[in-house]
Image 1 (cartoon, rainbow, N blue to C red):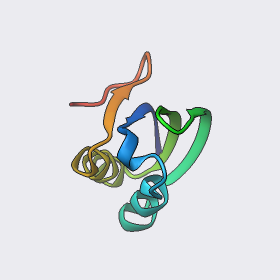
Image 2: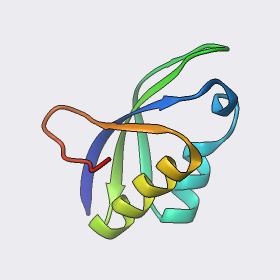
Image 3: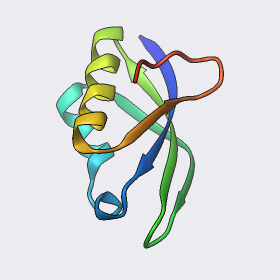
Length: 80
């Protein structure tokens, strides 16, 4: 199992949607919330994802397709 840390930035219209839950179920990835700042207008979450390399890539692609901005955490590599 591989691990990767990413920070997610949610547009206002996605803040109340269960995007992380859906990504985890569909892509067979285990999310661990490391930090979060969520209000009515701002959504920023740092996650540690665990899964196979293929599942991690699939999960990150899912988040991007959903409209979430994904940034790697220092020391991790995520293609945008």
